[in-house]
Amino acid sequence: MAVMAHANAPKKPRSRKAAEDAPPAPRRPRWRRGLFWAARAVAGGVVLTLAWVMLLSVVNPPRGIYMRAEAHRLGEIRQEWVAWSDIAPVMARSVVAAEDANYCLHWGFDMGAIRQALDQGATRGASTITQQVVKNVFLWHDRTWTRKALEAVLTPVVELFWSKRRILEVYMNVAEFDEGVFGVQAAAQHYFKVPASALSDVQAARLAMVLPNPKARSAARPTAAQRARTARIVDGAETIRRDGRAACFESG
Image 1 (tube, rainbow, N blue to C red):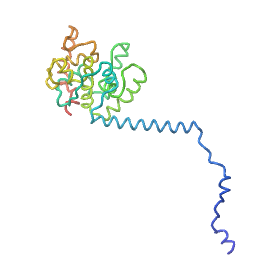
Image 2 (image 1 turned 60 degrees about the horizontal axis):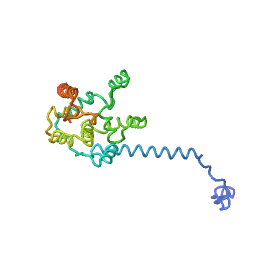
Image 3 (image 1 turned 30 degrees about the vertical axis):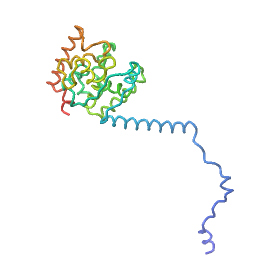
């Protein structure tokens, strides 16, 4: 019985000296600690980016990098945000007809246009409206691979969290239509002295015609070639209305 009692007796705690003499726990290698914190930083950046994208699906974005740079260069720029309901419906159709006729049919990248651009030696653009929104709202304007890679990552994210109508609404409010003139409201007043809600078919097509090179084109003084392009945009806007390619943003 005495042996059993001794066996079941509680163990004495280790002395302080024994604890001090115990070997320290092995530390992680420096590269593993660096990798751990780098992974945490990347994860935090992803979470913040997703939160920012989701917030801007309902909150109007602030001026982007390019817009702020132009404001600094020129002293000031003209921009007045206008809601979707205050833009003539033909303006949205004209922009889509001019810039991204398959807008309702893709998820941010128009693979057909990309293949065609590659077949033509990349002499024509294949950037969709969504890609241009990502560049104007979240990124900067240049042709570096870094910017293009970020654009490629963010484009499907915007398509996931924003509606097609929201993407187009933001695009029409941040696109540059003349030097220092951003957004359809400022452009309509600048060129035609009317609000965006009162744009006619031809006026809307002329505004869409200057995209994406507003510094080299004018909606007020179009050349013969630009008038011909305007006429094609008028026809294209009516075509996508009839064939249903405007449904994704006109039906809500």
